[in-house]
Image (spheres, chains in turn green, blue):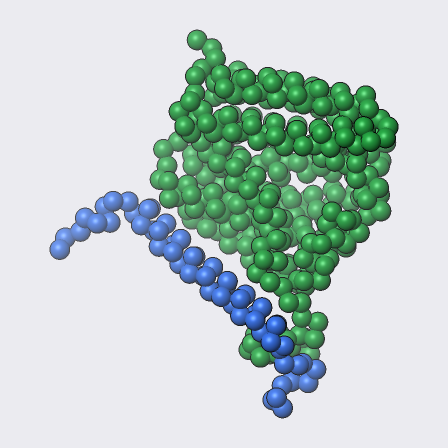
Length: 317
Length: 54
């Protein structure tokens, strides 16, 4: 009863809970992982653009906004669940919950309200297939990945990567009402890109992950095995990145970016494999981590430029 | 302040300021939602919405 009366009094705006956290608006925004949201908007937009669908731009824009809000909500729920381990790592210790600026129950409520709201509005704006896929993405990230995989298996980011790879599929479903081969190929590219991207960082931050008790690949299988797997995934990623050209929705510009970027990823992976000591080891891993972001950004930018700005020139006659 | 329930204290000026900002943000969000639903309705109805007998 005490907490209930406290809450009621707090709602009246005159008093605060004894343990009230003075969360600013910016802190709530930070719970949405804005940088991840930008990436989601970008990849979902590409999923829409490659679909070649005729759709009201207002409806497309609202759909895109709801996909972003849904992704932010899943990030918020992730931060709520992971607050205990976030507090143990320097990279995440300053997040709003471990830093004490927002109470966990506030974050949970915020995340649930945004999740339900974004799914419902996406369903009303576009269609219920897209809404269902967004709901699946949120549940997959917040429940399957955050609550289960992350602390249970070294394959956490491999399987969990599906959540990060789904936005183009949701985007295509929002504007066409179905899931096509184009967005599935984009899903596959992001899915295979995720392990070398995260493991490069995990090689450098393995001490922090060990302290937090997260079974990342370098901590479980060892750095050498992780390096080998990074090379294998990069070998798979380079040709996979060219699949849009083969399927006809990636043109010359995309092909050039795909070939050069794929070679860059392979070169970075080989460097990570070769350099295993001292500062050069750290530089190689962080170099691959940074380049992988650039690679994915350029691949999707090329598709956006070709399909969105009319720069498409088919590779095959 | 005697009407405050037991165990609670008045907001400090800083807390009141933060709470006010949060209230404004919630109001703006609700306004944005109203706008989204209005624009969405018009977009779904299409140009026919303007063609009605006078």
